[in-house]
Image 1 (spheres, rainbow, N blue to C red):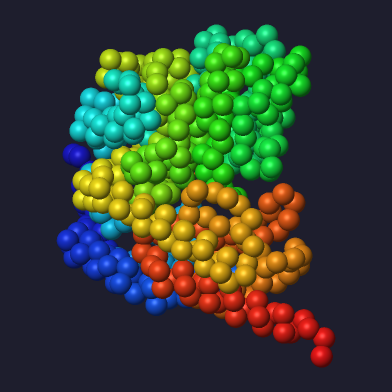
Image 2: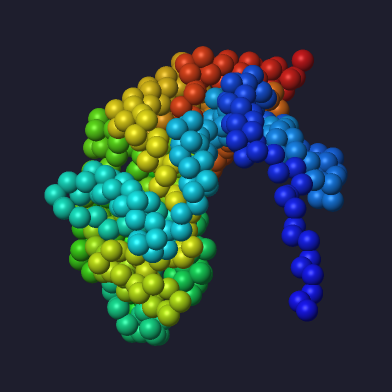
Length: 481
Ligand SMILES: *Cc1c(COP(=O)(O)O)cnc(C)c1O
């Protein structure tokens, strides 16, 4: 006699209807968007209090899903720096466009697996379509663009290094760095993103393989300076990847892309443009000239989660050629459907294997705003950047970077590092705006960047007012009686 079956497990506790939960969550999200302008931009977290509130969730007593979602919104709202705030003038972490959030809901809901084209053909084709859209703006002359969505700029840049190694020496795919006669080297401006250091370590090259070349006048790397650096390294290794940064994190400098491409051609090195932030302006024909020379690059990083304001993480690696990706990532295994280079199966052209449908949020955002909507959003941010720069100068601050992008680095005249630090602390402590500090040519200065599509003229003006009053108070407090 068969044993009586164990009782079949009942429904999950608090398994409210999916519709109720999702509608409630969407309402909470919409509430958040409507109220955020009134929130403080930064609240210093009390770590013990925060940890205690979180530890109260012992997960022993299930709660309604909508309550969990509401608590999560509260926790995120009540401590930290709110990069989604209209008066956040910090690094490139914009608020998410509602259409991007909606696209992400679709990706999370259907949860297609993008490893293989045949399992998620619509998702894979949508991503190909988006890669081509950027490809046409980078390389107007070329028909096909290779590329892949990534978790962000770091993975896209990592992909660039692996592609460069594969291109220079296909044997590297089997033998690793030992396949090179001399150690492979990566060249980038000293102002480039430090992700390159981690990437060189991850690729087994080590941090010293990244040759950080001091840019002339501290900002913009040009071809002649790069050429001289490569010559000075003769005998140390072989230049494999040359990076032009378009929009440095600290001060928005755009390297001389054409000059760097020239050097790349001379040395047979892969030329990569790291345009994680500024690559967004490819959608603005009026600003495309700022990236001139990009059409000579072999590959480009663009982070849609930066200027294009879709939820993190969304990076994009675009390249002229599929072959290096195929060499770097191609594998075959019995448990996967046979890998297809004809269909460009994502898992044999990318670092990731199981993969979220990253392109969904950009697809819905582009379809909703249209390219023209994005152009208008970007132009507005440029206009606010010009306003910020002009008002800073009018108010007696010295603007020390000359980036064409909406990012100003500045200080009161004659300010020491300590003065700048004091001013930055006082401004941020006010809680109504957030900005950062940065070092330029060895001196500390304040840094304000227009990042969000909700930022208005009035927000720029209140940043200026706050800077002016705070600086006046600081001077008064420091003036001997
Ligand atoms: C943000 C950024 C990166 C790193 O990208 P993540 O998306 O943060 O991984 C790399 N390079 C530049 C120029 C960046 O602005």
